[in-house]
Image (cartoon, rainbow, N blue to C red; front, side):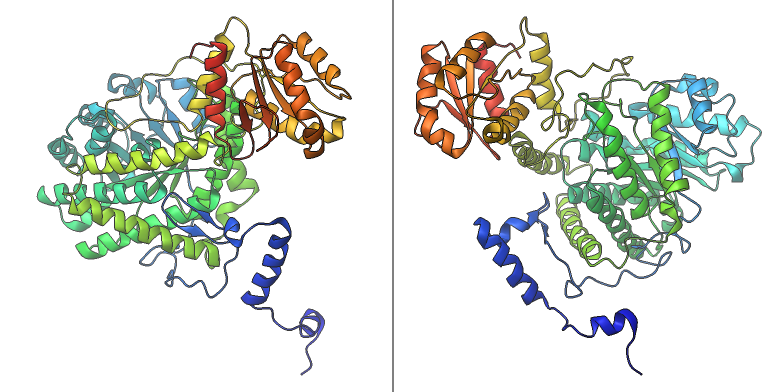
Length: 589
C-alpha cells in the first residue's frame, strides 16, 4: 500500500539524526562566537539541562498511574476530578473563610491560634471541607483542639478529612528548638477515631525557603518522613497505618518543568521508602506556590509566578494546591488578592482543563529524564542525611549544605543570571506601593527564611527613604538608534536599586552631553552608546563630565580607552555596582 497524505510527504525526506542537528546548531553558534556549552543550563543540584532531548535520553519506565512507583500519579484516574484547592488563612477571619469556600476553595489551611478555631469554623460544614491546622511550636495543643472540634460537631468520624498538622521536625527547622517527637503520641491516639484523618505534615518549605535546591528539599523531607515513620511504628502502629498518617508539603516554583519533575520524583522516592517498610503507598502531596519567589515590589507579577507554579504542581500530580495571594510578602491579603488566588486555580481546572489529562507530562523525554535525574540527586542527599544520623540529628549538616546552595543562588541573583521580573529586571520606579495590614510574625531562630528579591528590595527601600532619590545620569552618545540598547540596559540596572536615571537623549557633541549633565543635578554619570561612538567620544566625554563635576564615571560595556571607574554589562555584579553607588552617594541602608 502506497503512503498517502502527510506520510507520503514525510517519506520524501531522510530522517535527521542528532549529529546532523548538532552540526547545524554549531554552525549557527560559530557565527556568534558562542560554544555549544552555552546552551546547557546546570541546576543547583548539578543536573545539566540539555537543549534537546530524544529517545536516546533514557530513563527508567515510569510505570502506570496509581501503581508503584507512583511516578505518574497516586490514583489510576489521575486528577480528572480536579485537585483539592486549599486556601491559606494566617489570621482568624470567618467571613474570609466562608467567602473562599463559597467561591471555589475546597479545603482550608489555618494558621490561626487554637482558641480561635471554634469561632472561625462555626459556619463551615466539616464533612464537606477538609481542614489542615498549623500550630507551629504549639502543634500539640492546636491539634488536640481541632480534634475536639471534629469530635463535637455533627459529622461522622468517617467523613472527617484534613490534617492535625503536627510537624515537630519542621518546628525545629524553623526555630532551632529541639523537636518534640514524643508529642505525637497524644495526637495519634486521639486521631484513631477518624479513619481518613492525617496527623503529620512533612513540610519541605523550611528547606526551600532557606534557599535550598529542589533535590535538597526532596531529600530532607524524605529524611523527615522516615524519622516520623520510625516514631509512629515505635508507638505501636503498623507501617501501613503509619504511612497513612503522613502528608508531604512542597514548594511549587515558576520553573514549571522543575516543579513538574519535583512532584513526580517525590512520589517515586517515597514509593521506594514505603516499599522497604512493606506498605507501598502513594505519597499524599500538598503544593504551595513558593514564598521565596514572591516579591514586595511590583507584586502584580506574582500573579504570573503563582499561575505557572500552580500549573506545574497540577501537571506534576499534586493532591492539593495552595496559591499564595500576590500580596503575601507584603502582609495580609485583601479580598481581591484572595479572589485572584482561588480563581487562578479555577481557571486552570475549569477553563484550561489541566486536570482533564492523566499525567500530561508523561512520555516527554525531557520531563522523564529530569524526573530521573532529580530523584537520583535527592536520594543521594537523603542517604547522606541518614548516614549523619538522620533527622533531626543531622540538622547541622542540612543547614550547612543549604547555606552553600543559597550562597550560589545569591551570586546568580546578584549578577541577574537569575532574573526577577519587576525587581532586578524591568523595575518600575513610578509604581504605587501596595499597602496591607501586617501579618503575624513568623517563627525564627532556625533555618533562615529568605526571599530571592530581598537584597534588591532593601536597596529600593533605602532609595525611597533617602532625603533625595539617588541619581545616575545616562550620558547617551549619538542618535537614539545608536545608544538605545545600552542606555536601556543601564537604566534597567540602576532602577533595580531605586536609582533615578535622567538621560541626555539624542546628542551630537560633547557639549550636548555636558549641558544635560549639569541640568540633571547628578554626581555620577554612566556613558551609553555604540562601539563606534565609544571609540570617538568616550574619552573626551568622560573627561568633560569630570570637569563639569562628575565625581564618578561608569560605562555601559566591558572596555574603553577612556578613564572609567566601573563598567556595567550583561553578567556584571549588578548588586555590587548598586551597593558601590549607594556608598558613594552616602545613601543609608
